[in-house]
Amino acid sequence: MSQRIAVIPGDGIGCEVTAAARTVLDTVCRRHGIELSYDEYDWSCERYLRAGAMMPADGLDVLRPYDAILLGAVGAPGVPDHVSLWGLLIPIRRAFRQYVNVRPVRVFEGVDSPVRGARAGEVDFVVVRENVEGEYSEIGGRLGRGHPEEMAVQESVFTRAGVSRIADYAFELARTRRRHVTSATKSNGIVHTMPFWDEVVTERAAAFPDVRWRSEHIDAVAAKFVLQPGSFDVVVASNLFGDILSDLAAAVAGSIGIAPSGNLDPTGAHPSMFEPVHGSAPDIAGKGVANPIGAVWSAAMMLEHLGHAAAARGVLAAMEATLREPGTRTRDLGGTADTAEVTAALVDHVAG
Image (cartoon, rainbow, N blue to C red; front, side, top):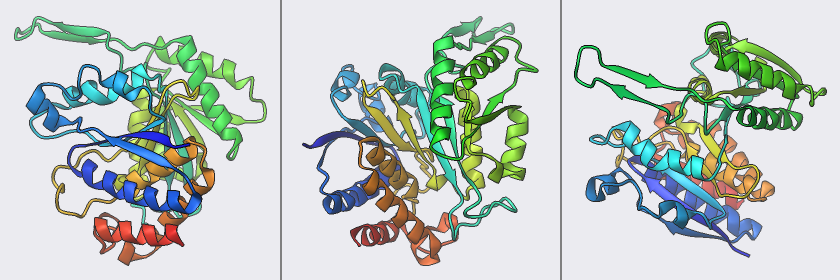
């Protein structure tokens, strides 16, 4: 039975890397006898400038029946980032209860990390980010616009249910890996929400006595990402902290161009969404030099989520093979290949 995928290429290089991911998906699915069907939607900043909205009013209802969503990137000059994100990405995450954002981080053989001592085979961890509440709430507002006393208030929202379920996901994931969780906090300076986060994580940790864990302030975690990146296994963090830490981790791994992510509803009641985290990169859009690895890795995560673990492993093996050689790495990773050449190399490896 075919599984239905909604494809939203978005803006800039999102269109290019999504096409590359689709090409790799077509090949690996043929090899493994997997049937995926795609519907593509032009929801983007271009649509916003044309129609006044990133997606149609019934966009969420359109997406609801799909098994998964594959997103390229959103963002373009002339459209404020808060308009593009709150007009598409964040409503999807929240309507479909995608409360887990998973961002794996690896230093691959052949990819030089800018961090001394971050070596292939030693840096392999996952940032688990709470994805629907925390610091990215909609509660707040502006007062006295344009006046000297103008002010802005943004409220953070941490619920027991929200912290419990993201902590449980992190501990359960750690059980499949090296059984170690680091909880990022800032309870020495943020007096209400972070002590509450710490208390709930501690409560949930008691249900996983086989998993080691520690709580560390986010500034210490950020420093250790650079100084001791090999010491992490699963890092669990709030919405804002997880966002910042995962981008730092991608830089430690060599390039944000290879960083994937999954926005997950672990219950399966709603479609989950998979996207590279590099953004639309308008400065290189249309030049054919974008790194497709982040999108391809995101597609592999989608395959695993849909129950096709062997196919996902095949894509990951192809990534490892192409990243080893300069001739099949893009320029941001010290290679010489363009987007099309990397895609062709991935297809060759996946096809066997």
